[in-house]
Image (cartoon, rainbow, N blue to C red; front, side, top):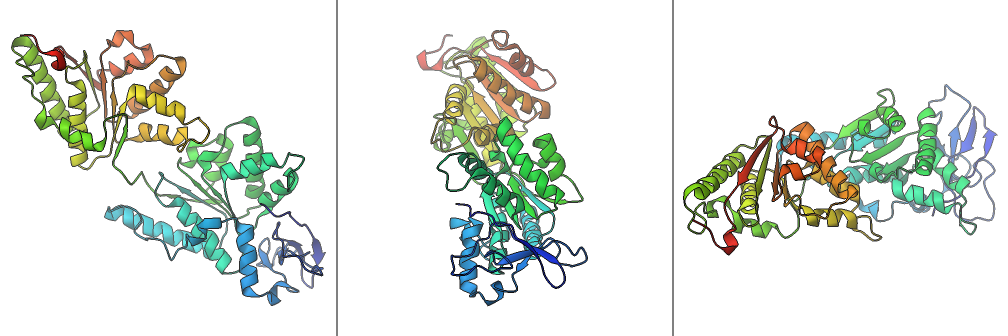
Length: 449
């Protein structure tokens, strides 16, 4: 719960001060006449004062407050909850990778975050794939401030928007205006997971109100997100990319499991489909059918060793397309690549399921993993139930990877001319794709001579 803001401005010997937004003290018999019980004041009149705009302890009451009481109060205000354990001391300064270059990069990011925690000025933007340690760094900044006795507020974007919506309810514990004002004026605000920013007109308007206020007031703010600033909403992107206000730290691509699968082709299944277990002779194939399947095998083996552009296998059920694709996946994993292997009908079912209440993964997270996978295999394209939504999502995936010429394998039992025209055009592009028609019969039901 966000505590209601207090706004009290009064004069002191040298300058005017106002209470820091919403840092309410525990109930007491008397309220400090200087800070109104907030325990912090902000210099607002003397532009030459080095403390101008920054929260400082109230000289009448906070300086005599017990340190443990102050820490407990700041923790309640911060909303860190279980993230209290995420400190700089608990960080692995080499990050979550075994690559020496990335370890050095992450160590540098930790140093930048520590400097920001010591002197929070301007904006700090932490971007990178899930699992790179962005939230830990952001929470560590908040924890360092709290340990020093300074206020900081930590919110995910989704939680912030939920609380603003809840403020409209008649029985809300805190009304909308109070929540909005406290977040706008927080001495240090940390907004986690920019990708949780809902693109509705209402959410956009309210979120940008907060951002614009803090940008214009140069209030210290930390953001984390997967997408780089230039891929966000234009007005937000202009703020996040302003070199006079913002420092950006890019924490790199995804770490963790190098094999991501949708459907039955799990990591343990790949060994059964290794390329050295593929028999181009099938069940006694001879003549043109055998030569055709041997050609597919040579092409798959060559591409697996040196991926270049796209490889598209066309052919009927049981002709070996999936075996070859899985064999390529196993080889690329052995070479150190990250691979995503998705059966297309199962993939579309899982993407739809991300919109259901209680879904364990958001649509945009799963979708971006497919867009950015170093090697993507789309197995059985064309077997899915066709709908405008399904065609659009498949087109978006393929178009994104086509523009970047990212290594991609596609298997299908349909002719290209039967597919959605935009998809067919990209699959058939001679500058990107190698298309191979497998004419061998179904291995499961026996082979013709």
